Image (cartoon, rainbow, N blue to C red; front, side, top):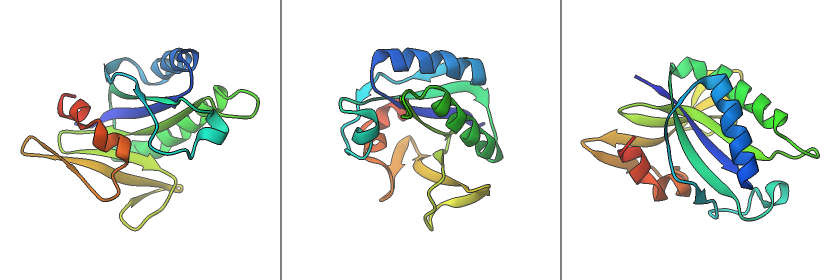
Length: 154
């Protein structure tokens, strides 16, 4: 069973509240949500979003297949656009799925370890779950490494 997963990066509580409302309209109820945490692992997004970024992980009740990630990635891009202000995004949405064995994100950035899903979307396995252990990889993002306990309990 694969559950829709979204990582939501934002600046300001208003952006979070607007995003959560819109995401639930599109994808249904949220099953579990991490506590917001400071996203200070890179300054890559500062020019577009500003400083003091926050991030939250969301697991939806909605069950999906790996192939659904192509359309979901397009939908989240539209939602980012809808929530934009003054030509800049106010949120960054990283969709994927969470299963009993792995966390996979849908990305537009190709690398050799990613699976091609079509339409320029790639499946990026970020975490693996085996024998009650959360396994990371050299390409696992720092915020996922630091918040492994959320995935142990989701």
